Image 1: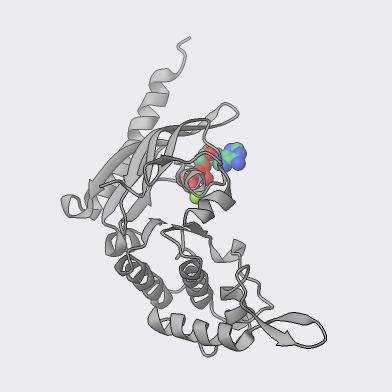
Image 2 (image 1 turned 135 degrees about the vertical axis):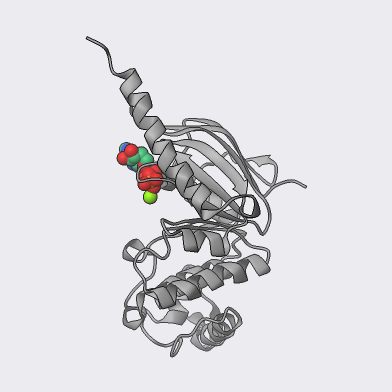
Length: 264
Ligand SMILES: Nc1ncnc2c1ncn2[C@@H]1O[C@H](COP(=O)(O)OP(=O)(O)O)[C@@H](O)[C@H]1O
Ligand SMILES: [Mg+2]
């Protein structure tokens, strides 16, 4: 079966720094990928390449087996790839209510008959569809007419994930979605990822917390200094193994560095 996403030998350089080093991977339909690695391992860069934000320096990127050529966030979006950021730099508008935020950029209009044919926002329809969607996803929010700025961090995170469903996402990219929310809310965000999976939506979750990764992921990828050093199904590994991979990898890279030190 053709994977949803396939990367072949992707490199990304920032000046002389190789942030993505010969990474190849596939993401199947409805598959959840857990992406881990130390700070600066290249996780966000890889996510941004997939989301169309960064253009790879070289390598091939295929969606549904077709080359992804017009590399931009917009064309990634058109292909159903949505990125959900951390709360602090999220795409929600705090002054707008939940329903307006869910429909941002995809508003529903109705026609009114006057002297001219006017198009006005169909608030009622948007609110009703928002209620249905949030209910379906099990997201608990007091009212869809509540301004986003009054929601908790976890609720905001849930709204931005729900938003991707409205945008017909096929792959949702979550970069540290639980890094600044409470444990109780983390649970809900993780449940939401599993709900997306049940709808056949793939996701990639980046997290420092092994619990997040092991409750959601089908497959776990470890990055080190831009390189993919592990790609394993969850049932074939353990938290210990993965942590060791991250830590040992670091040791290994330190000894590499020592080896590479010029000798006087
Ligand atoms: N826009 C950029 N310009 C220059 N260097 C960058 C840029 N984005 C990331 N980097 C560098 O690339 C490396 C990988 O960063 P990043 O992908 O953010 O890692 P991670 O998300 O795993 O912490 C780091 O050394 C970082 O400083
Ligand atoms: Mg990062």
